[in-house]
Image: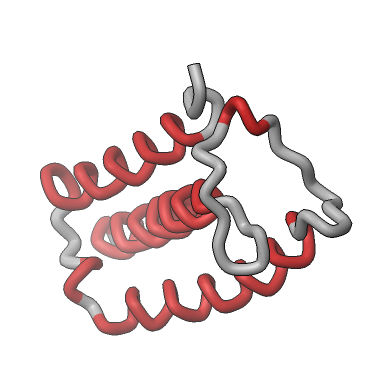
Length: 103
């Protein structure tokens, strides 16, 4: 079953985090330019670090190819890494927004 080990959980994480914001928290985070600027900054650094860690010519981190789609871009970065990064950073920012609202 290709993709179940990393692709499915990362895709589900993105969907769950987005649903959590849209259906439950409703912080308006996705409408804030600061969120998208933050995600652009994260993406830039993630690309540099992941590119170095996962380059196929000399990988530091190796993935089981049966657990992934095999799509890589740029610099051999698995697309699943970008999904995971988005879900993780967005979840943290949503928790931060929720905490700020409770104060």
